[in-house]
Length: 388
Image (cartoon, rainbow, N blue to C red; front, side, top):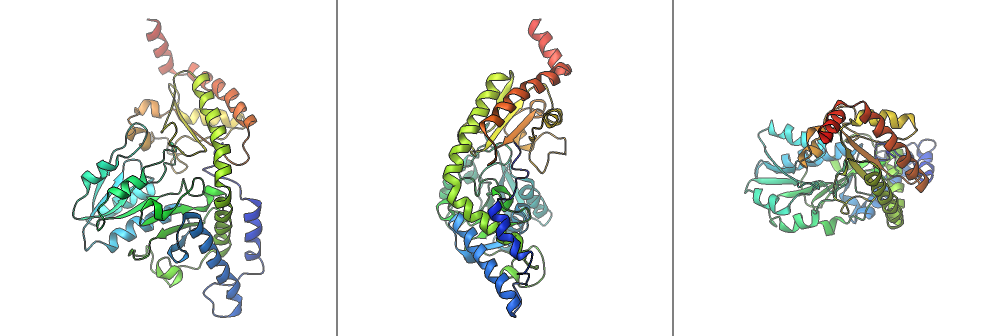
């Protein structure tokens, strides 16, 4: 039940990758015939990824992770437009790869405005417009949040931005391959995605950059990826990314419908069976496979360990912060107290999950919560106050 952190490769993806781990081992940049097969595969994958998001192949640049794509977008676009201004807008719930990239740019003289979100984790488009300045060169707002699953109003934001104003980037790592995305309809200039979020290989990702948008590379090196992302291409991973993108495009409708049914069963069950529980994120404007909660009077770490003893994998916070043992900046930004946010729990459904899995979680999670609350001084104090 933690498919966002890691999910198995689809068999078709693994099969597509195998020839490039064996006989088709050439370098795509080679001029001799051993490079032909690798180069053809690279370009096919580029077309497959572009098709998934409604873009053009030449606008897709391969990277090794969603984090790299976000760094490349935020730093690369901002630095390329520094002659026009040094003001950036992000939201308070961005992934750390966006947030920390913006902080790095602050050390280079950029100014960053962080807009708030409401209790559902939604950014107000008008709030972004209010913070636009003449020197604003970049707005970066995630498409969907990777901790609570809330989907942001990207189209509305894009429509409100001035036509000749800042570039607009969206971190769509959590949403690409899981809900329909069309970059033209979104009205954006750049989009980050990662293959491991839709059953492709880890270490495979991409950044889509609209034709005509200037972006500087993060690294110095060779001519790969049009000079924007130097370094020898990981052809097997890229081939796997392309195949996963092709499959995801065909299966999103059926997959989403199935996930929503299981997700809603899980949400309803947790809220009905566990007292002092709350859903986090928007109740309906959320990713189809995300069920996120805060369970009062306990800590997420304890829940994760006891659930694991029952063979249940979950998460508390994002995959990038689950070992930090800190309150989620996303939940705090949504107005949830530090104390309550410590009890966060996220379940993300995958293709292998069934109604039986949901039923098993709904059997074991209340037991785990009850056991931890019996050991919690906060819960004991609460009960005494209620009686008192």
